[in-house]
Length: 114
Length: 115
Image 1: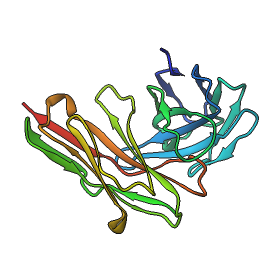
Image 2: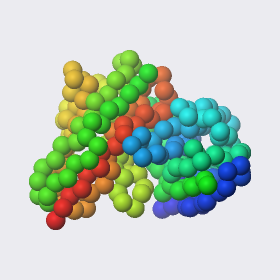
Image 3: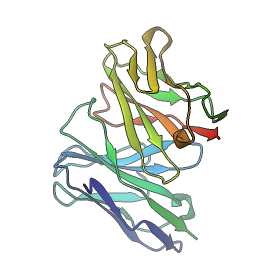
């Protein structure tokens, strides 16, 4: 059971470089999410996609873009990486719509920007 | 705006002790859901429980139990007879009526269980 798969698991970038984080889920979920986790701050929502073809901003969207390529895949792009974007990034998915569906998380991507 | 507060940053216990992790939330929504997730040292997040705002029954699952009190806006998590494998970061999260499934997380509580 793959669940939610994130690639890469680790990445080091230089300031100003661009990067796309990939996420794919095999649970036929409609909704997908990108979070970042910083020490002492829990997880914060960057962008989400309620269903294929839609995306929307979360709490901390600045400096990021997303693409919901199809139902399975939801990518996160850093156009010009900054040291403040050093973080652990988690992708998650959940069943169609609503408040009550638990989200299933990938293993995370640890991103360092020098 | 929604907010989740986990006031305990770190808790350290000895194996077999009981431990309670506190979670206090703020929301203006009348319909909302509360969640607990576990993040073991390996880094993934594991879903533990979901509770809706209309169901204040406590829940027990093995050594885990949850106490939801709407009057105090709290959703506390107790581990009975803790084990070393319980060592992890635990997150409380809230999904409210206007947020469409978007989770607001607390800061997390680092639980260390010593043998």
